[in-house]
Image (cartoon, rainbow, N blue to C red):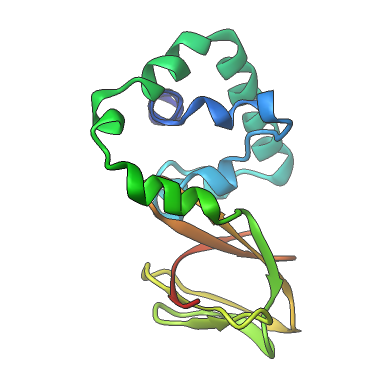
Length: 167
């Protein structure tokens, strides 16, 4: 429990204020942590109801401690970042929704995902997942921290860290 508390407090310090529900979106721990961090914190052992309760707790925590989120947005490391890459990233809209082309059976450490919009994304982490074949499932690609992206497949609880290799 102590590790979980430290992980959540660290996330509260590092996450920008836009993760709070001020923009109308609820916090989602599944989309906010890397797969490795999620597993390392033992969160993969929680039920869906427990994860939703954790999301609600963290969202409430951010509302009650707005100065923590404000301090993160004023961090010198963020201020020192060049403006051009941030502006380019802002032009893209995430989360991105599309459908995978063909049958999805999971990922294995070097999987490529071809989307119906022509983009191709490649797995960057070494996780693996097997599932029964799903034809043309809906996928969502969300931005993570520090220019990372996560692909989630509708009906699959896990996410995979990806990079775009074809626009």
